[in-house]
Length: 455
Ligand code: TYD
Ligand code: MG
Image: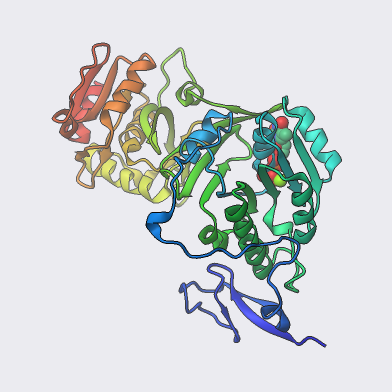
């Protein structure tokens, strides 16, 4: 009779302890402890059965041959970009994201457009018929994509041995289980064990693997946090379910930069690559409207122009309301305080609503100047000229601080037909290129910008 032992595992880092804990001793997080049943004998048993792992002999570093790493073209410009120029053979890529954001759609679409690879798509969530229905919505070229609805890791290895796929897709890691550990699928021990085994398989057979992982807010299912340490690349698929835009962001990449970004639009027939995001994010108003300012922002390494919308109104009752969508609320409060000090804007009596058009979340501090201008524009009911855009970080004393990659920002604004850009004075020194079609208006303080915009 095998002995059952209860262990306590940290959901965040996977550290286990024989006793319950409030704060994890390894990563310092609070309330991350979950109880799990561990099979006592599993430690001595062979780790994973079903696939024949070969022992590797240690070799000297200089004896390792580097064949110039050939990357696999994913036939999708945005995915290639985020992966750092294509998929590295033998690498394991984790795609995380909230339920329903479109992870399965993304990987299936990529799989169906890869015409020269044999692919095995393992779905633990949907039946083969459901996948077929989904595939019918996405126009496909691929015939060499095998679909199996399976959750046992041992059986998956059997399928791998018969099909010998060149790309393996696991949807999702939380549904896969191995017989070696006793806990239920989705528990931390299972997720860790299955992922470690798959990684071993990927490295030995040089087969790349895509793994889908769920993120849940309360963490009932093991979040992919522990997986992040195991895999080579972590991509996050994010966006607002009510909007069409989805962003694929690289959080960790052993084979490329993490500042890359892929933008997609969710359509009836799958995801469409968005190569020029600015055109989608601007609403192209014909007439001038107050409360709108266009910012030349950068996400990752890509510049694009976004529309900042603000609405201010007299607060009717008690505390004035503050609401920011797509922008940090605390930063907005700070900008409001700067406005009060510099432009006599009475915040205590105003409701302020701020929105970044398109459902995008922007962290770039260079949009500060647009936020502050949009709020003032709404408050005074004076529109900002539609041919003018802004870039600049606002400091506490109202000074306009320099921003990074200014030339890219100016070039993007010029490309989209803007004829005037308000930018930090400090940035003028470093400019090497000339921009003939756009007027550069350097400013030192917020007052300078307001004078240009509203008089
Ligand atoms: P899905 O890939 O199932 O999400 P996840 O795997 O991340 O849970 O996608 C879910 C949503 O995408 C669903 O609400 C329907 C929508 N969708 C489209 O809008 N167009 C499409 O072509 C497809 C396949 C899905
Ligand atoms: Mg799914």
